Length: 356
Image 1 (cartoon, rainbow, N blue to C red):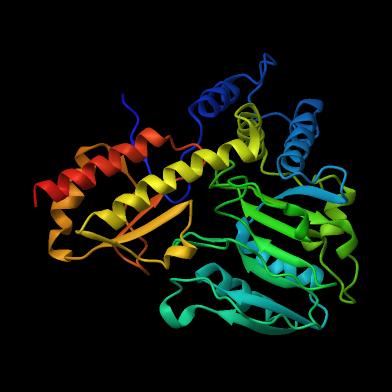
Image 2: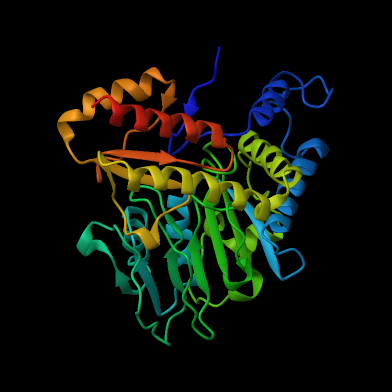
């Protein structure tokens, strides 16, 4: 069967070779006779998987031997809204409100202390990234969301403030572009975009920002405890970590983050050029804030929607519907999506124009 052109926002497309290797491991992990789903998480085989996944994450972010630790958790990025505040919020935290997930993170943080919304784009349904704001000097940390999956915006630069750790939810664009990741004190990301299947969350934290809150942190919420236990305090999400390791290996073989960024830029340019050229469509977000990962766009005439929907479905395209908060369409172009799939979508859009 020909595989669909998968533009799903998440869980999303992963490399075919990763699927093939992972499917083999479900029956037999590296000739052991045991499935990845049944081996002990304390076994030498899985300890090696965990260590390799953590090491590869730091390597691909350029953070190895720079005071950072990589950890894997369950609970998705939504649990990190809670864990971040548990571990870092003593007096006051600052948040940039740029979408649904940042709003949820703000809600959780308010359970632990004073939260200041430093800037927000809610006034225009989050279709831009706030700029020209001042970062208060009395924050325990400043939290941002690098890429907003629902609305299709992406931060192109990040705020700085002396002695204020920068925390970033990178769930939908981690490993997609070459930036200075050492500017962040803590990064977290759900696996189900650029890394693996749902069920695991990567946390990369600089050790020296921890241990500064006075509250008692429950064991399952304590970053320092998970560092001490090498991300094995409890049974980790074994299969999700394994597939994340395979995906990070694939990324390394593909030339790493800098190489994949060039491919992602080419895909984004292709779709946005067509959105801007085609008189039947318009982009949702401010052009300067457009995401490389999630291109959001709408039809200028919604009466044409059923016809366009039939065309892209006939072209074996999957997952193009926009989120209900925006409507229209969302083309999610994560690392494993080929530029050929984007060409198929663009051809459909051109054909739609010619026949309308």
